[in-house]
Amino acid sequence: MNAFEKLKNKNKEGKFICVGLDSDIDKIPSHLKKMHDPILEFNKLIIESTSDYAAAFKLNFAFYERNGYQGLLTLEKTISLIPKDLLIIADAKRGDIGNTSEMYAKAILDKMDFDSITVNPYMGEDSIIPFLKNPDKLIFILALTSNPSSEDFEKLKLQNGMFLFQQVIEKIKKWNKNNNCGIVFGATNSEELKDNISIFDSLPVLLPGVGAQGGSLEDVINIFNQNNRNEYIINVSRGIIYKSNGIDFNESAKNEIITLNTKIKKLLNY
Amino acid sequence: MNAFEKLKNKNKEGKFICVGLDSDIDKIPSHLKKMHDPILEFNKLIIESTSDYAAAFKLNFAFYERNGYQGLLTLEKTISLIPKDLLIIADAKRGDIGNTSEMYAKAILDKMDFDSITVNPYMGEDSIIPFLKNPDKLIFILALTSNPSSEDFEKLKLQNGMFLFQQVIEKIKKWNKNNNCGIVFGATNSEELKDNISIFDSLPVLLPGVGAQGGSLEDVINIFNQNNRNEYIINVSRGIIYKSNGIDFNESAKNEIITLNTKIKKLLNY
Image 1: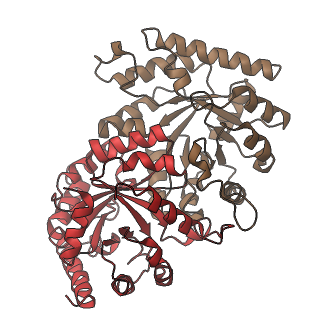
Image 2: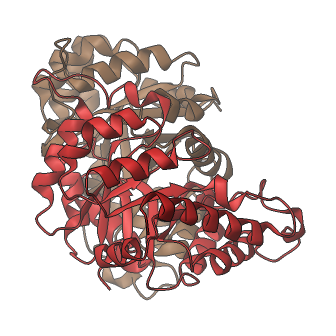
Image 3: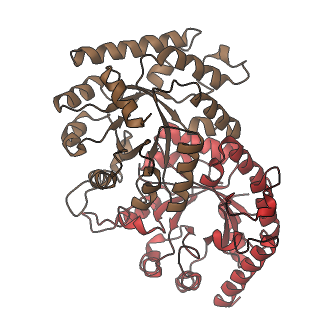
């Protein structure tokens, strides 16, 4: 199924939460550590308990590469556990010269069969275009990120009066010929989201920064709602997958995403 | 051994070429394709024939990820084939929020034991600092890249009158407390290198763009020489590893790097 369609379908069901599988061997419950592949076991139980309530799953590559090729095997096995009606995002933040980006697209979108990937725009158009070839995939390009140092470069003022991240968004709209571009926009500062949402046009948005990083779920939902915008997902990683550290971690994760969904539906008067 | 020391030692021997192992199953000689791991076999023969003449090897992650976890296994095995006095660079262009960059640093610099990695500065200081913790590693941060679209963002003029890539270089100098930062600066346009080399201070430089991408080896060598600068490496990937497509590909690669070294030594009056 087309990736953007998957996202829209879930949004229509009132599902806006992306479960971030930042699965860390040092943080998962200790009873799993005796398993053959503790991270896979952890992911399996998290997926089983949250997939009915999630809009998407996001796999953060760093947490898999940490275990070398075996970690990448865990990542590939995890993908196969996620129901196919859910968007599966490779949080890989790739971007390189054309022939290399093409190889990353083949690796992550074709070979590993992710629906979606996060990419870094620093190197410009020819580093992004190879990811956009397949209209069935959804490419989330970094605009404004959720970390404090986003001000170092992303928020620099250009001579044309725009912030760099705003110029990036303008370029993305031009690249979006296959209707398969999205943006990453940090939710840590609600004012920035409010001030900029009008320039997003209809681009789908992946919002990190809610929860452990301090962003407000209510603010995000209200701002999108007031601007008559759907097609967005709010990533929550640590706030769901490490809600409990005990034997009941998967039940706690399920309860947490249900709580978030209930809050969202109330805000949206579902 | 300290990574920067490795680079300096090779530069002192008149070695400035980094062999880029962008090893592509579609481009390697056909007689290797019947092997169990054709890419590993290809890399082994290239390394054996060029390591006496190279300053460094650079592994482009895209070309390994393309084969999924098995590709990452090939990558890890390749690292173990490279003599330890040579700098081994992970061309991975990573960069993410702090806790994720920390995980990438653990993965690539600790677990996989690369000496060096390329990183993307878009997300700012807190996305870079986790890579700089170990003073024995060398972190090449993208400044100006070698691709045509570097003009989209890297060459945007800021309100302070600088180009974005120049502002990035200024920040890198501030981050360089452990003397383990370097920059990536494209060699496709010699004028840009000439105009900017004075702001690099003593940062080591990784220069892509010579060869297949059109940059001039002579210009690069002359510009560094005229500015009394050592501590740089010129990456050549396709120009060396695919010099021949026949059974003699490794001999051709060896002859090519010897030709480049001879040219360099002549320019430097070695």
